[in-house]
Amino acid sequence: MKKTKPKKTSNSSNKSVVVSTKSQSGIQAKIQPLGSRVLIKPFTKEELTSKNSFGIILPDTGSKDKSEQGVVLAVGPGDYQDGDLIKTTIKVGERVVFSKYGYEDINVDGEELYLIKEENILAILK
Image (cartoon, rainbow, N blue to C red; front, side, top):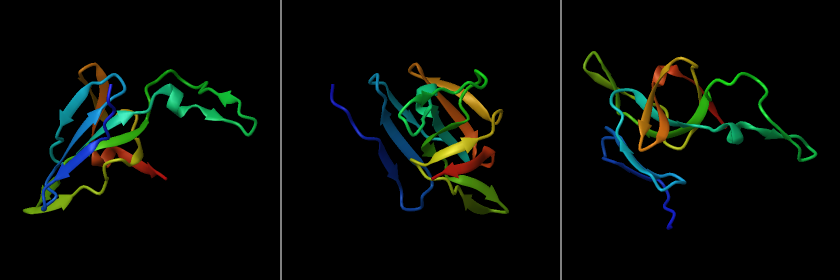
């Protein structure tokens, strides 16, 4: 099966971004968030595990809750305030930390994604 890289398209006014992603299972998803919403693919537990200096994997022994970190797949254009468009500041491809209860679960072709308002994103991971 041929692997494809995520594609981004946007018009010159940066009104919206549509991202076409191909997951490991070959599922194709096309979603365009509205307003100041952001589409995020949460990290799996394997992606969140860490290694110590000896190469030993230290699994997350905390709660079994869903991930609160992920990668941005698509962003909306922003919200209007007093007739002016306030653009979103989050960019596609950024790794972010978001509020534990500030998202909507959506399932696209068997793949779990989160739709989050930009105000519920707490930090960008560098």
